[in-house]
Length: 246
Image (cartoon, rainbow, N blue to C red; front, side):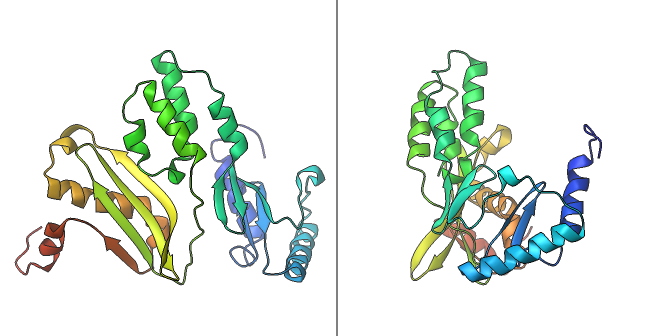
């Protein structure tokens, strides 16, 4: 495949998914030229590894030995540290962010926020922290990155829970699931209100937070049971009102 073609990434992804179609989401996951396989035990991993390598042999797929890692308990996948407990930020990348010089102009500040934004799913109220385009926001964001919690992978057999909230200038949501009476966060999302949204009433902003959350987490929620938690009773009244109009 030639370099520089606009459809090359999508075509390559479809090719990889066609090769491992019956294995994806069962014993492995594929993203472009990287794939990870897993198992519930050491022997199970060996069996799955044999299946994947056999499939690579059948289609003449060449692997780079130097980039292969076998039988590990944790590893870096797509810029995130994946381990048995869940998903963490890659602290090597955080060290780079910590060592960035203080931004002295708008371009440098936006560059910093771009680096920090890569891990925004780990940071609660990221939009609130990053809203002021001032150098002082750098310190708050660094603290949030260093203390970022471990987020859990989703359990597709359990209902999802969304907790939404809105303020005067931002909306935020947390996607999670409850297990053993404990809530485990899966992802965070937030958005700064702009333009006419700033003039919305409190009820409209709370409803906007729900719409934003459902749209943001749509890939998780399709076909699943969803429970939404809000702190605005008026929204519940609108849903139960018999003569409600759109």
